[in-house]
Length: 217
Image 1 (cartoon, rainbow, N blue to C red):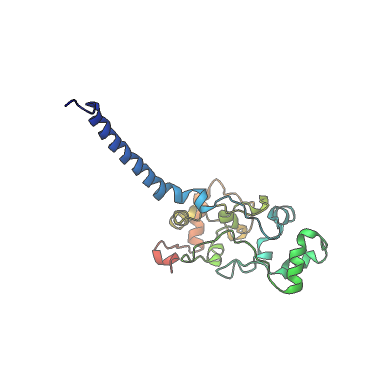
Image 2: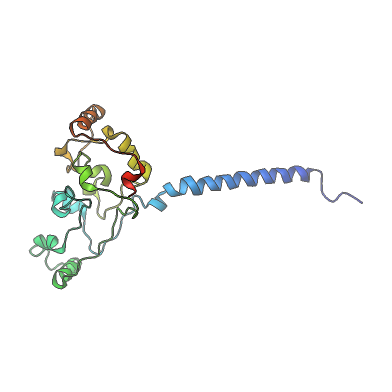
């Protein structure tokens, strides 16, 4: 009986098996390591469309409104706080008080029902983060949130992955700034940041933990 397969078929079969294993390995690496860090998963730099077009670039950048005017509990509580409608109406009962785009604000004020803002920096429920603990130790708003004064609709500037948090907890001197500059959205780290950071670590008694229970409670 004549030979059905060419002798080279054995080599082709072996190469195909090896190639299949390599492809499977690359896919596994992609799924386990690359995809979870991609912006598709983290939603980094993805602007969220809000029910009311509140422009940080206008309010913070052009008008110079301090972060704490709206986020009143950022230095006192674990959460920064979402401003109630009354905060909006402090200005908009007089300014742009008939603008169609602000009708949801006026309706919220009339009905007493809060505006359902879309959360941008949405940590998992198993992650504990305390805003006050960070800003009171010299971590600036823009370190985590970026230049919101240049954003229309706010996006998530950082990945919020655990490795990003650990980078700061392991080397806080790279990120700390004087407390007087925490709310300066335009602040830029000086050339001597490491030297300054080491001084601030001592001055502010910064001792960030890297144990699991620090954030996973």
